Length: 74
Image (cartoon, rainbow, N blue to C red):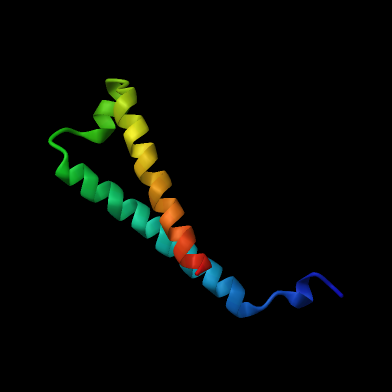
């Protein structure tokens, strides 16, 4: 069998949809965290080189990625 003949349009569209949904959730979560914190996350990470804030944001995004993948697989 040809590899491309087994690919279904619904699978491709659902992959594109879930990718867009995941990116939207990442952007929305960053925006919410930026608004909640009393300081600028970008300035803390880029200019002040605050490693603790960078690790915290990485943990937030990693946990969000795990949750999104669990929802997609269920």
